Length: 369
Length: 265
Image 1 (spheres, one colour):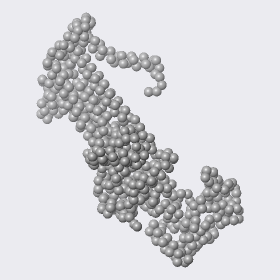
Image 2 (image 1 turned 120 degrees about the horizontal axis):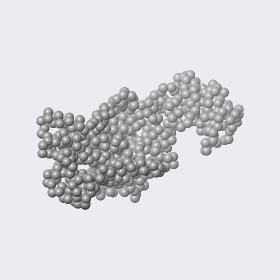
Image 3 (image 1 turned 60 degrees about the horizontal axis):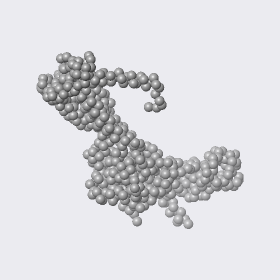
Image 4 (image 1 turned 90 degrees about the vertical axis):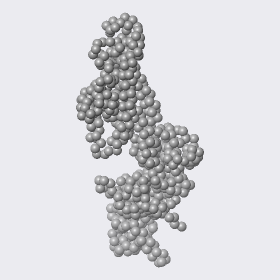
């Protein structure tokens, strides 16, 4: 079943006065009830998308739709969208209760209804009993929860979260990831979460939009994006990866480091130069002479769960390997991997072409069997 | 302040404070002198105060002074607050406007007074209550602007976005977020304007006409006619009133400081 789209961007471009283009002809759809993440390095335009949805800025070109209605000119205070700001933006002159009640008071809701809703929202974020604390008395994590309560109390259709976890320490951040995900499931409203932290994005999202330089590079589920990055940027930005130059000899056969390997990708021109991605955890260490590649260990670090090693093959390519086996610098080893661990990327392929090609060759594959 | 001040520094500080306050206390002391001059203390008396209170002309002048101070501070605070908000919103011309604002504060009162006199004469405004009030409002506005601007600059701009996000109209953003945040600055500006107006002599001297006078101008003309201990008594009352104002300002800023000062992002 497909949910109707709640937010739609059609060819949206945003440039500021000094002519810098922050968003470049971006189109996408957001469905109701899902957890979306806008992921990218700073300056990629992710916060600009958030501010466009919130209504703090207007697009220079293109159209934004909310439930099918164009909302380009609708001011922020008339949109059914609430934001959790990066610095929380809690009102310092109001206590916790009044901060959460702010939106309801503007709506001139009855006093008893306000009390009921505020205490419900505070219990949603586990802050019962903190109603009459001043904001200055709250810790970073608690302020975060107040900011979330202040957003959800208004029962918006969408909640926008602008890097809300970046100011918290690692442990609290991990805990809040679980809590936010859980909260989204319980409330059933759309969350649009902005972050530059790929782990956060992979852990929490139903759908990820990877952005760079004002364009959406790739969108999809965390697994799709991790397993089948569309280009070098996405492969490099999400997780750790070995990105090696190769050549697509024919469908399902790729040349890496001078040797042909069977793979599961296809739909490209014969002998097309490509880049291949193999994740470090997919490389397996074998004794010397075994496996698909012969390598020498050139550096090694203990990372707790695993060893992280850099190995050089005979062609001079450097491979990053994660292994639980103890190895030493200077060891000569074999590296092994499976055909499905190889992911082939074409240069400058658009997302539509990429999707079409994947669809096509997976069909071919299933016909062939 | 960190560490302990050395004894020499303490003595220096005490000496400075003593030198600054000694003439005032000398003046206050002689306001209770039953002798007619400040040359020798003959005995304690409240006669000078009693005579002051019996002098209806002087009481009217005191009243004028207070009304001018309160009204001018009130108007200047309103205009100055909105002015500060406007200046804060500016981008390019902000610094030049701030510069113009500061010039008005540092330029000599005599020049401001003289220029107002010229202005009122050209505009055909009769010198008296209104001319004094207008000029006091005018020279107080830059002070209010200067007190309110830092609070605006200190305010996190995402607070305004947050308020809009929660459904606040422009008016609500102002009344529910900006105004409460800058209130300490507004109060500071009001009290500064009040004290500037109360003790202004030079500007007022130029723009008062016949039949209208404020305390500082009155004390000046009394002093010209010859030393009288009336002046001492009057000055003492003025001094106490100023201390009272400072006290009120201190209490207000302390209270709001407790509420806002502890907030750190």
